Length: 584
Image 1: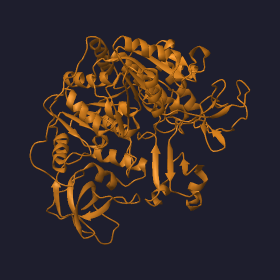
Image 2: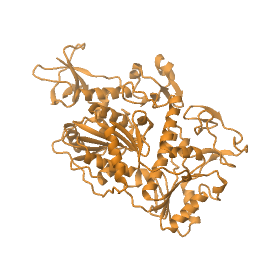
Image 3: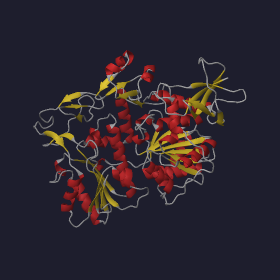
Image 4: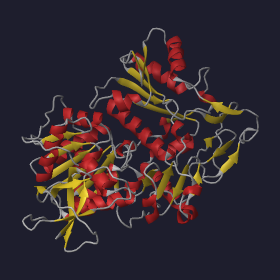
């Protein structure tokens, strides 16, 4: 008999399984974990199948069975499906998933050390979420981060079976473990989990000893015994994608396959879940509706002051909050693409004439990341006709000094990456770092005003997802302000665009329709090749490839992709479910 074996090694994308001879006294079945010789060393491998014959002329024998029935046939099929979409070897994917050592003993469990708080107003909201989850096998929920953590606690109490809670980064996973009670059979798994603990946790999760697993990306790939619920928190966070090294997989898509394999409930929770989820599952919103008065038009003469980015509404809001002995949070995210093309006379920002998205400013022209329309930079403002179009922007350092002059009796602090100046000040100027790396769950209600000083910055990103990401960050700020009981103001030069984002149902429907019109994900699948030159590709791939800056883009898969060297970085943007296409 012959065993088809996937060695658990990092192998080139062109590699498949290897045939090994079986001794008559060694019973082996599909899914067994075996020890096999490979290039002079003994390695672990997974048996894909057992057959009677092989085309290979000379076969090496399997040494021994390390663990029988380690995987199911469905597990193997799932790994093969993911590897096919990623254009990677199954062996490399298995190498990412499984430990290289075994360790005896019980898996280390987590204990909460902080106190979470589920308010009286949260209870009916959580009951509604549970009811909707019961009705729908898969569900997207739009709500505050704190409510997502509370939902994890309630789901664990109300549902039996194993539960996977997936988060984008180690910090979020550790905060969940620290704040949320998930029972005595819960473990935490991330990139810095010690190897022996990692081996124990994976084994306990695989065999069903462990009831709850809090994990980052790799947890979405693990085999599990009786999975009943998958909860993906911060489902819109792009750090769910492993972009640093092969295999470059999306944990959210892997979680969908895992939930489907076990017929488990799948819940995608975020301030705004991804549009990729909303084409296949219903969305419910559990936050209050916000008024149009929340949006401040920076181009309005009524809001004009002598200080950039500090409108009349924001300045009066700061004074009111400080008078009430409350703190002020001013959000200004200058990380990444902060510059924009704007008229210095009337404040007008030119939009794409084809799809009305905000274009990217290049060296000597504009290009729309959404529909790829290229435009000349106009000599005069299309709105007022004045020759005042130029790149605009202001930094956090300048803003802090301005605020200190305006409010000399108050303390002013700054929270951003590599800079933590007086974070408990009366007025705090913060970047994305505040939410990603500083703020902890269930924060005390100390803010009286929360304001985004330039909410449309992300619209200038070189990606068609700019509007979606802007809406997600907008609702994160709105939800935070609501939990704080604070007034919220959203400053923008594009008030109509931002107001349309306040209604999530309206915004997501409109954005999905736009994506469908221009054949963008989730209505198409993309393969992006970095480090590849068009003339070096096989003729079949050359005819399909589109050059976009320093990368090549393909809309269909081809077996010839497997022949490309591993030095070419391939990013797959799409569903791992075979034949899946989004529909509205």
